[in-house]
Amino acid sequence: MSDAEWAFFEPFVVEKGPRRGRRPRDHRLVLDGVFWIARTGTAWRDLHSHFGPWNSVYRQFRRWTQAGIWDVMLEALNETGAGNDSVQMIDSTIIRAHQHAAGAKKGDADQSLGRSRGGFSTKIHLRSNALGLPVAVTLSGGQVSDVKGYVPIMDQPGPRPCVLLADKGYDADFILADLEARGVAAVIPAKRNRKVQSVIDGHIYALRNLVERCFSKLKHSRRLATRYDKTADSFLGFVLVASIRLWVRHFVHTT
Image 1 (cartoon, helix red, strand yellow):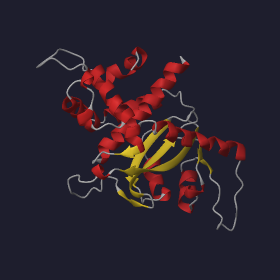
Image 2 (cartoon, rainbow, N blue to C red):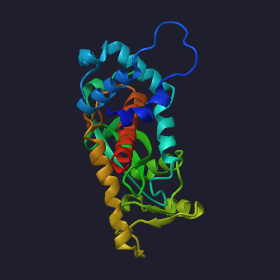
Image 3 (cartoon, helix red, strand yellow):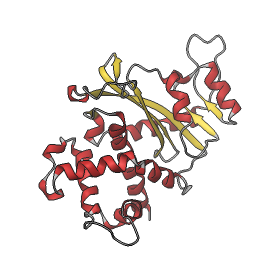
Image 4 (cartoon, rainbow, N blue to C red):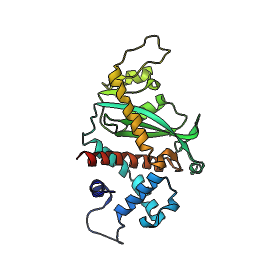
């Protein structure tokens, strides 16, 4: 990462105060290792030796993920108010899961894995702003509909929109009623089976392509384009890492 990028990440990952115990690791190098895994999709055991022992980098990634550090970073970026938050859009995309993604410890959680038309998969639900930058992210099994994924993504922390754009997959009475209750103007085309076809502003609706372009940029990180992680929190961690890098690079290139 560049020095400008590191200036953002450093306060979140480097502990301040008196040092106790053994010498801390080079967190910049560890973070670069995480970015390398996210970008290439490589297995942890094949991490380049330049970044240090793969198991050390993996354990640090897990510690940061379980501590919620990626969520804190995304919230901090949203709080800058630089994302033109009044207009937002939501959408979802299905990610095929590799056979190695199966096999997590059994329990009540399904690890956001399911069976859809695309096979064994996970669905990423995304809310983005008018700059095409992620505001909030949630996961579900691939078979979960956009309608069921609406409430979890809207209840995530982040700035509230004044206008929300979505495709006709989100055209449901309870969604329209919920948006009205939240004071949000809905720009959602009606399904064909609706007796009354609402009229939407085509110029505003055209902005919805920003969320699709956001997905395209996120999938440049191959660890997202195919799910290899057994646990939902690790996979979500990589989605958040890629989302944060989109934000940081946007700031770096516009300042």
